[in-house]
Length: 282
Image (cartoon, rainbow, N blue to C red):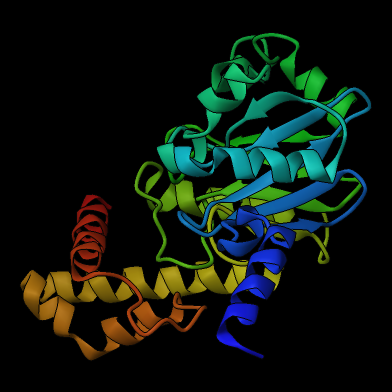
């Protein structure tokens, strides 16, 4: 085929492919039941959820990324012809709430965490939003304190799937700074008590897992805490702790994706500093 003919052939062929098909997809969507979908964003790696109700959809933890909201929205529309009615969040960090305003501007109602808090004096939610989640979307909400002061877990009993936000991460080290060791322990025990041995746990980041993986994550965290406590009592410097062979071996236990560069040095340093401050307080 001549060069001219080859060029004409390519020009005729190119319209068969859209730009969206040629560029790399930024999201993956997995159907776990007729009522629950899990979306993973490749940028922030935030796990998102879609709960399907009779009248519309509820979105859990829409991640930021204004350049990709259109793609995310189209993907959600492709999963169901129902409108997106509500958005909820497991906590208030931007990598889990960054898409809130986009979906609000497209007709969704943001259900504020304060509307899902249990009133300590009455023992009831501050309004009827919990009832809405339960009746319309089959979701139970459980409040804990670990990653932040207000972590919300969303359980869908019919699908046996639990969204836990950053209380449990399957691609990073533990980040249990708000609740401390006690709050972390209580939150993990809460996760392990929900559902049954087959419950699928969707972390804030990383692959969904079973309870065996969550338990290993917790046990490795306790080993990390114990080692930091020992080195801190020995008055080792931050730099010395960072070079400790056992500390580095324990850190790699959280590297479930086996990345060559698991966490940046700055993040490693911060993890040690925050852990040290917690063991000092106990």
